[in-house]
Amino acid sequence: MATGEIGAYVQGELTGDELETALAEAWNELKSDPTVMNQLGLDGETASTITFQVHEPGGFVAEGILITIGVAWAGAAIWDGTKKLGDVVIARVRARHGDDAVRNLPTDEFGAAPEETEKPAGTED
Image (cartoon, rainbow, N blue to C red; front, side, top):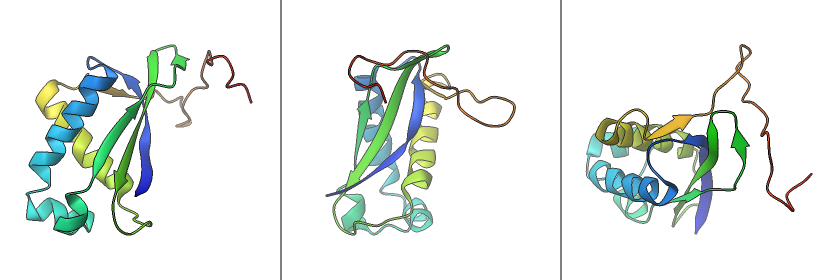
């Protein structure tokens, strides 16, 4: 099974488990839309194997708890649509659960995300 990371976010109104469920529900709706499948460059067989994982590594930024969202699929190990898939599915989750369901990492005036202010034990560089 191939995997990719959609990105890092700040936990919003949905917990990690709730967000994982919301992502799966959104994907179940979206994967039956041929326009979406075409935009993502996916066929039905690959689309049916896609799953999402929400990881809560325990890091913090001033705005809250960091989470990462990953995706896994069967088939080709290389697929450049991971980020686009994330954008489409997260937009659907926000449409259903509100804009604060999951929040983007804040950026500074140069577009850079902040450093974590605290790291879990055993994860120092």
